[in-house]
Length: 200
Image (cartoon, rainbow, N blue to C red; front, side, top):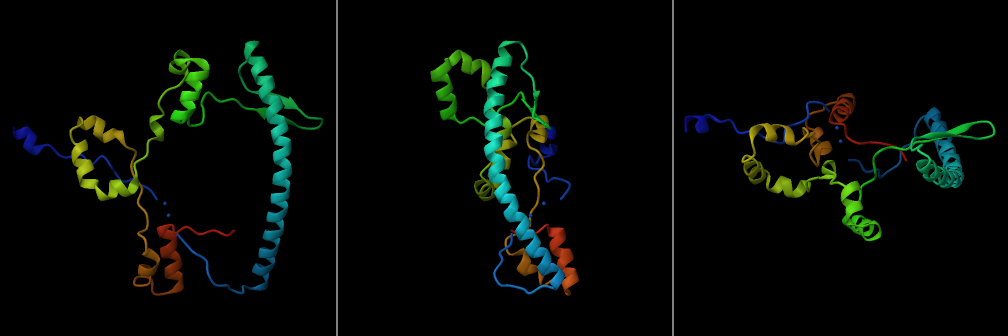
């Protein structure tokens, strides 16, 4: 009884001990000439990239089709690993990993229908790493969820979840104006909050 009274409750949702981060662009700014030139060069390179990316996809699909055919043939010859394919001047490596993309219930049912339940049981398992909480439900019921999880053994509870991250509150940028007194301070504050920012 005394042991129960002194038992420390374990919070299964430990906070990750390191650092992670929303922005909306609206008006326009005229930058110095060097930045304007960099923007034009960036856009030109981006357009070229998109063109070549489309072209690359066509060739990649051809190579993947050939590689998959070759891989399936090699499996039956006892060579189920990755292999290199020679081009005229270069080469590519067809990489095979002993893992799969996520399968839905519908995918598994289709697999079972085609190959039988025995094959499905032999080759398909639950991906426990894919389980995610609905953050809004967890937030609204945090205390109740933690309380319910307290019934688990402490060793299980301490190791069940990876540590969670923290993030800036919605409206943090507006609130930052009360704390940062100069543009330099604001820049530093936003960097420390890891407010997401990018160009597109």
